[in-house]
Image (cartoon, rainbow, N blue to C red; front, side, top):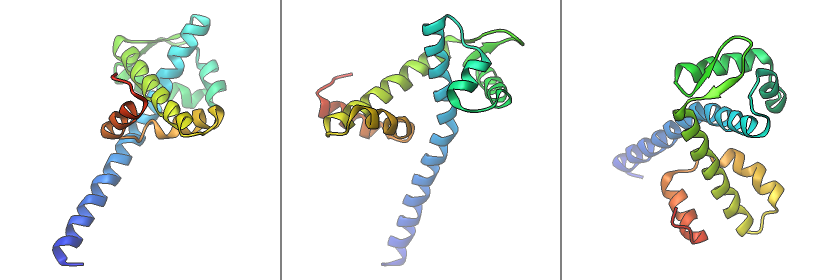
Length: 144
């Protein structure tokens, strides 16, 4: 491999690692806003204790993450009160849910059983590129 080719390969890999790190940073926020939205739809409210139970984490972890969501203007919260999504948070929840459903539906179309596809989509949805999502839509015949 030439020196020039080696440098290009190094840059390509670095770009991929940067994309994965960025996805990891947004992954938690996306999971939280989706779950908050689900809880509000199911029960009328999203409480710290419910988030902790469903995510299998401590209430302190939830509190820290909710404060991050508040700082990022994705949610609102007051001590000992329910958590609500801002319009920005609601939009992120919708986008994240649609991406999850698209990835899950592609996996099912490929022959993966629904339960496995849903579990696998939970990880994949945060790391898939816009180009791949477009290919998934085309594969499924969706114009979204």
